[in-house]
Length: 78
Image: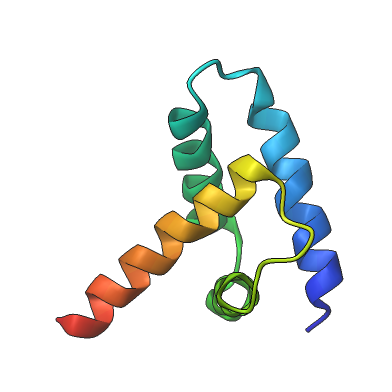
């Protein structure tokens, strides 16, 4: 999986939601989009990238991936 491509796509999705004045809401919207439209392996790859520093992720997509990572950790505990 090409992580640079995933980062680019996440940033493009984040740019779409950039008009949202509430940055946390924008991040939740990006996370929702990733949940609905990205395959599980794509989400896992971007979460792993974040855990390795998240190079190239803009602020809103970075926060969105953080939300996905925390959900993933909660699911793993269950």
